[in-house]
Length: 186
Image: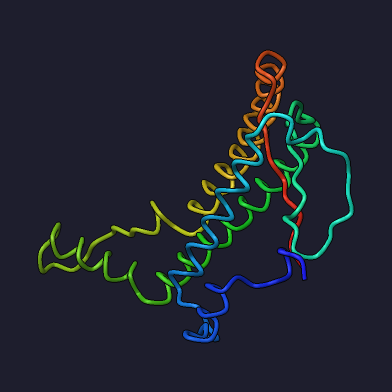
């Protein structure tokens, strides 16, 4: 037998004297995970790590890694995506405000506020003309919410598009953001 296949006497006695447990403890698994992450980080940081040719992966090998650099973001796609997301956010805001105001009205909050203000301002006479819904009624609040939602759509879309342009300028000067992608282990 060669030296590679023959177990050493120390390994043979260790195997016979103390069998390995079927399940490893959490700390052992965590240490293995951290050490493999450290090895992967070292492999990524080593010069020439990305210059290896493409190989087929054999069982037991580390996953392939690719170091990529994000040098340009398309402002048009950012504008379309941010517009759709901000419209969705505006619709959610409008519906949420409608639901809150409906629940407050059904719970009698506005009537309680009216009676509290009337008792404070006019005392026991009870002939108050104050109505809180004249100031914060459903139509006024929903109108204001719609106005704010439309302004948010315009501002969020403009800011996101401007951010894409600024990132492209900075990436042209500095080289962009470097990202390391790894293949999933199956």
